[in-house]
Amino acid sequence: MPVGEARSRILAEVRPLPAERCGLDECAGRVLAQDVISDISIPMLDNSAMDGYAVRSAETSAASPDNPVTLRITGELQAGAARLALSVGEGCAIRIMTGAPIPAGANAVIRFEDTSESAGVVSLYAPVRPGDNIRRSGEDVMRGAVVLRKGDMVRSADVGMLASVNAQCVLVSRKPVVAVISTGDEVVEPGEELLPGQVRNSNAYTLVSELRACGCVPRYLGIVSDSREATERVMREAMQCDVLITTGGVSMGRYDFVKDAIADLGVAISIQNIRMKPGKPCVFGTKDPLLFFGLPGNPVSTMVSFIQFVRPALLKLMGASRIHKPVVSAILCEEISKKAGRMHFLRGMLTVQNGEFFVSTTGPQGSGILRSMSAASCLILLPEDTTRVPAGGKVMIQLIQHEEI
Ligand code: AMP
Ligand code: MG
Image (cartoon, rainbow, N blue to C red):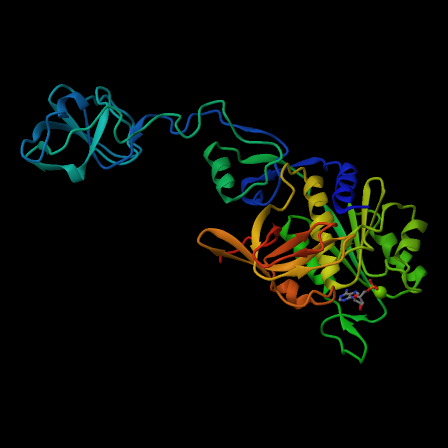
């Protein structure tokens, strides 16, 4: 099965989790399960965008440095002041601070920098037009407007938006609880002695960190040995979770028991053998409502298949309306060749030169070589039919790390 088809079939099986209430302090990184509507206009009142004087703009039209217009100052307004009974009469101005409401009669604010003041009189050295330096009521948000939508992932600016509209408690989708199991007789935990032939468990740690980063609750269940019984026993503990991810044990080896064990637990495997490299042995199945992903054990295969299939599924489970990593085009800095038949994902490093994206590989591309994944900021996507792209050719890249460059 091609990658795109596998992804859409997986996503078709995912239904968003139910909603729960969440306070303002906790909602960053959660996905809204409701539209958020403002019951006020922001700003509430027309107010000053500058420190200066509220004036009638028509009276300022002749003002210049050589020929200042003078106005009598009849009051002062600071931010937070109620509008009081202040109004700007003919030949008058009111001293006004940023954020203070525009008094009746005034239709512009002239900034302090274009004036001087002495003995209750202000001299204006420049004209202002109607509306200058005034922030209009509702220019940010109109009363009744939808400020955030169901399916939006709440970012910092959104938390500020929620605070602005007094949404102290909003509906968000419940966080998916995701079980992670590593498999392999040769796999040992960090901190344990490493005997010849053993490998440290990296997969569980990359996965748990990815899961946290996308807003899930990871439940790490440890390393299970290569036995059908042991695998089934540990997997059984995960059946109450929303999602189960295993790594390793899905290939054709004599000790690869994950598929048998998960089938014994009643999970129907609907996808396997995906035309991709790395990640071909990746399997997906469901036992409603559980989603099961059996990722291959090689550390890069684990990560690439997580990014292609698991992450978008988790985001959909969380109710997110945007679930895909961006794909953009870039200029390839080195020649690449491959066999036709599978889609390849190469680890790439993105650079920007004169505003254009350039990409080079991060080194050896074996599926066990985690270093080149750790150095990558993108994946270079080479379609099934592609056999060669010359240096200077165009490729599509998937951005996997949005970092400063
Ligand atoms: P498998 O998919 O079980 O055949 O494993 C493929 C390769 O990935 C083997 O060389 C394993 O040693 C390695 N591997 C499996 N699980 C892990 C893990 N949790 N962390 C690091 N490497 C692993
Ligand atoms: Mg194994």
